Length: 258
Image (cartoon, rainbow, N blue to C red):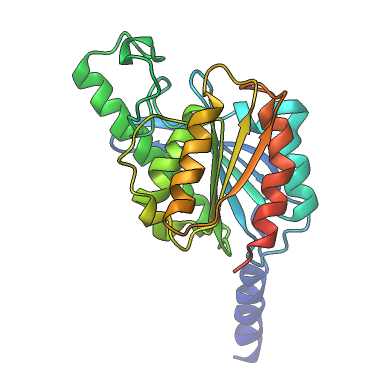
């Protein structure tokens, strides 16, 4: 009886000490709505020992994939995650060409978007799926690693998605950061971001997401008493703002620990 009890105790202890995998992990899960395997990537820093760590969900721009931000600038986001001790997750936002559920006015018609060959019905379904895919992957990884808090960031169309998903699922996020994601809509519900730390990063030389849009969004938040962090680099373009902003974003999130 003693031997059985000892073996059982050892088995329970071994299971309790099991640590989830670390490093850069290309992964996928079965997305029921689409009846399709949807890929994503996860980076877990070497310091992970089974105790909860903060997690960043990073959304790519138009035409990108789950690899875009993970590999950007020679894997800069992974280097920062290793330094600060963050898990990073990059969903696909299945399928490619969708808009994560957001439809802000960015001054171009839908026909100019990636995936312009879709019918109206296909586009609507794709946008619903891409929104669900982000939330599915966020919940999957946050649960697996028992994330201590979850942040959402994005670039370009991924930044527009961060504006949208940030307020739509406001209770999920410990902070938001948008890079090159200005839009024209005047009816955005900024009040729903109250209590959520927000950073907006913008290139002054951006000809796709014009800097005055980001400035107007920051002004609108300040007008109702919010205090967003605004980081603009005069010479930065639509793309180069990413590698300039990422270190600022990690530092900003570290300063906002709850």
